[in-house]
Image 1 (cartoon, helix red, strand yellow):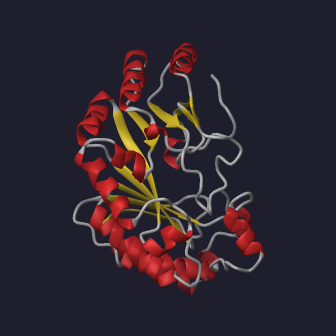
Image 2 (cartoon, rainbow, N blue to C red):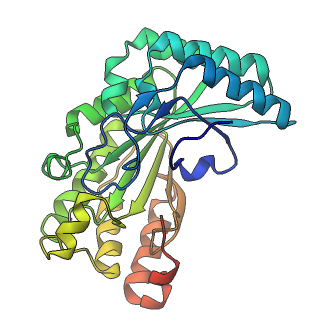
Length: 290
């Protein structure tokens, strides 16, 4: 197996076989992100990718999940992805799900027919980093996609039958746009109606450009209590019409939340209210990490 540079994966892919099909991130300009800064974006040779799967088959007796890395592997041409998925199906018939990171731009470049063909070939989930529902915040962080484009990409993925797991980041707007960020995240979830939502909390490390802004005092991170209040405001403005699995139990989060919207919304709001009353419920900074 060949791995180039640091390899990242979603929390839910912790026990998956990870194979790089791209190196780095094609966008790699988000101000808050320190991932993939150690490498330039490139596509791996298909022969090398297939060879990695063959090696993994010799090593592992059972592989139930596979994650195609790196940062936005959905950028690959559909024909190439279909050949990779066909190889997975042949070598790992027991594999229940193949996951992939996809930027909103990656999704929108695919036709609906292409997405359906990927679904039929075994693609089981697409992880889309929305980060915020606010156009102002998206522009500030240099996301490279608008609110409307992100919503369209999630709807397009879901309409193809592929569950979308959409990530948002608490604290990303700082204090100045706290309310806008929270409310617009909630209304984006309501509008796009993804199958899964993951909420992380902002942790900035060098060489992310936002790190220099924090050091210089140009960006003031939220306090733990402000993060909790922002999360509460986001959930308050989230009104989904079908089940959406909600997770805010990443190592970066101050308060762990697990539930399915809309059924568990009141329970999760109660937990956030309790954390606002009792600071002892908040995770200590020493235990927060990416």
